Image 1 (spheres, rainbow, N blue to C red):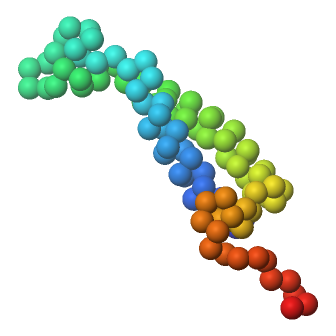
Image 2: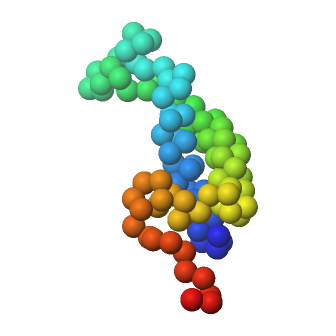
Length: 97
């Protein structure tokens, strides 16, 4: 995996994790009964985005380490995934053929 691939993989994992972490312990204006006129009752009152971004970063580092380890070890390759899902690549070609 190249450096760019590693950064892209981390960014994808980070944003997917962030979208899962955002609604955790979210307190909306409707929940607290203090809806500001002109806003939706589902608008967050207390969102703690900085804390959630740090939590997301920690989770993402762990997940990235797991995925990068699997990729570097060769336990699962692109051919394996193709064989499980699409079966379009065909058998691997060796240098002697």
